[in-house]
Image (cartoon, rainbow, N blue to C red; front, side, top):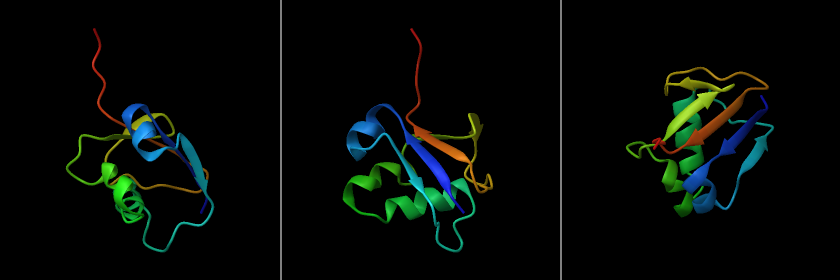
Length: 85
């Protein structure tokens, strides 16, 4: 399964990455929550995505919960909450 992941705002700065394409997710990484946990396991700076942090997710530009299934070709975005002024 191949997915494109986008990182926005402070996440982009912390991770030193604005986007990436993962062409082979490991078995068991089938939901937004599982993807987030797997990304956190990459190391220290990736802990910015850990559960409990105020991070939102979207799949194909629609807000998504941790239980949202992901499919081949999906675009998953992670971003901090944004407030308007």
